[in-house]
Length: 411
Image (cartoon, rainbow, N blue to C red; front, side, top):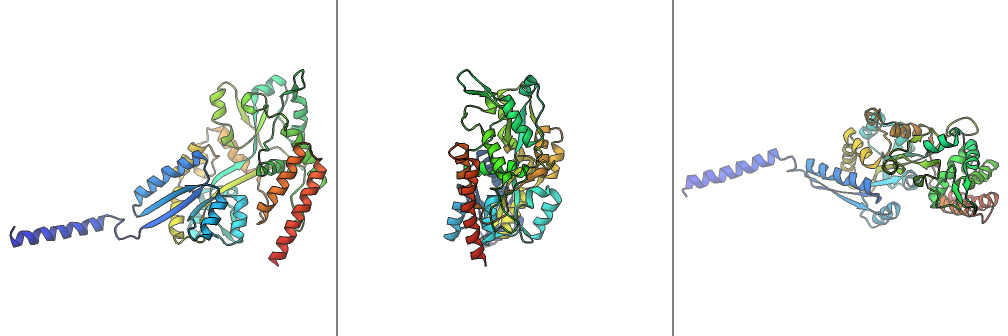
């Protein structure tokens, strides 16, 4: 090859390299690796995994690792080891404790503006601390009553509108066989772990006019008259000794839960049995109230790529991605655009509307310590080991000691 030909070949190679560099947006950019930690529920994992693939395709300089497991334990262990995940999917009750200890990064102004413009306030303002906001909402669940329409029609009874009416309905619709085995009831409120027991009892506690703590968080107030009455009702509504009763076996008139707990499973089993979502029941003061709990995607304060993490979350929560989340998981819509697109889906829209009446567990960094002693004493009442009065008295003793220790450490 002649000198001129070699020079031409080298020059063309150099020019092509420059052209590739100029036209490839990933070239010249710092390679970024992010890690996102979520729980292991398969529909959410599917949505996250599919979204990561698309984001990496659009942003070749970004690699995102998705890990799953016990959220708080994994987050704290990895943070202590200096390898904190950049993004973590947290339930609101765990958020309070972590943000109080400075482990989470506040959302930048553009993210807060995005939340204000596009999302229902109830779904993201729960993730606030001081003047800052910390998360995009993923799961926003209001515990709502869902009715088997046929049972109500056959029994000739009206749907309950208050928590007191629900207790009366339980007594009216309970059926037993000749051996005394319960074969039908109005409902069977969930009680499968400490967190569930406290959340499901909470809607009755608030409905009867009670609360967990006094305003200054100096002592427990759930052992009040309202607290005792609400726990007695919870015991009655839990049908604790009848685990065979399930909404899916058509022997319960009502079930309480989030949108994803019934559809599409029920309609596949019983396409001819209509399910009606009722509004949250009314408390003694005439106002509707129920328990709501929220999961949010937030960023670790230990992340060295906080801006890139928020950029990914902002992209992940675009309208089209939120619609994919809704379709994959069955969560109620909390982005305004999704609500408009699902105007003909009364089931999901009813669950979204229910969030307006949802009340969150108290915003306190000691809640994680409160859950176990309270949940365990509720279990003792459910199993008839002790009375509701004794259960709440014992729980209040432990919780008061937790509050006292927390105040002393905080001062």
